Amino acid sequence: MRNIKSFIIGLLCGAFIFGGTAVLANSDVLAKITSQIFFWNNEAIELEAYNINGYNYVRLRDVAKIFGVNVEYYEDTNSVYLGEDKKEEAPKPENKVLDGNAYAKEDYSQSANQAIFNEIYTKDAYNAIRQSIVDITEITKNTDDYGYNADYKYAHYIDKDFTFNSPGKTDEAMKSVVSTFSGYYSFTFGFEPTTKNLHDYPGYRICMPQVHKFFEPANKATDSFIAEISGLSDKAKVKRIADYICDRVAYKDENVAGINRVFTETPPVDAICGTYANAFVYLCQRVGIPCISVVDDIHAWNEVYVDGKWYTTDISYYDVARTDSALFPAKYSRTDPNTAKTKFAKELLVPMSTTK
Image (cartoon, rainbow, N blue to C red; front, side, top):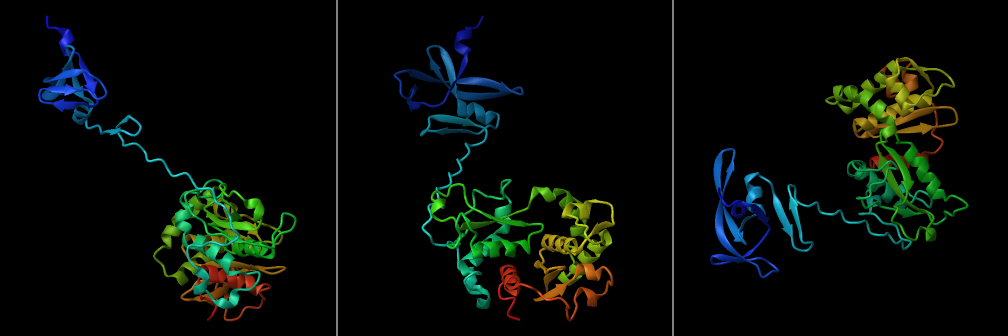
């Protein structure tokens, strides 16, 4: 019978080789360099081996190569990784220490209509929100349930009039601004969990866009419609969107329906003008058409940017007379109660679009 002891195979991670002998790292053990035959799927494979005290050892890397397994050794941690390489640890977010100044990657306000800015509708607030709109795809691909992306460096502004007892005018104005174009994307304000001295600047704000999970039923229900109109011109898309909404919604006073109900329930869904306007913003965002909602004391309508121009469109009115003149009226009878907010929102979506 063969000497079984001499054929027991060990695994050797590393050795220093000198001629016909090897010295194991960090030891005084000498190994004689020899060879060992392996059979893998009936195919003979000869590997270099190291005989130590009657036992044959082969290098782990050589054996792993036979099986197509990657092996990496990291000296800093004295660790061996099999299979995938070790994952690089994601850098821990740095604690953000505020100094009272606003931050943005660039001054987006320089590309906007300067007439929209004042002591409430500030350039700092514009830059913070505009950066989040520009980077919306990057931000929303990895947000948590609160709409925060820990890997993204948000722009911010500070409403210095804000206190813990009373809201600042800019803070209130910006919440109202983003509400005009919150639909498929929702926009909220907050701060990074790593902000250390927030108590010194209670008016500190970042703008956090997200595709909210709440709307997943509506998203799934409208996927086929979005794909269907993808090749149309923007103006044709607007008309198809308006028809799609009007086919599903029936105007009825005092009936409010949310986005999920509009697009998942069997039509007609009874609703008021605000439902038409919100659904229109939602679908326009899904196809990349800038759109906002406008509200006065009793009615809601939209402004939509098509072919280089903002158009007033009233989807609930259009539901009555489905003509282009109703969808893109030359004149509109209602008056916008807050043109400063509307212009600011339009400039956030399309810089320099309110100068025409």
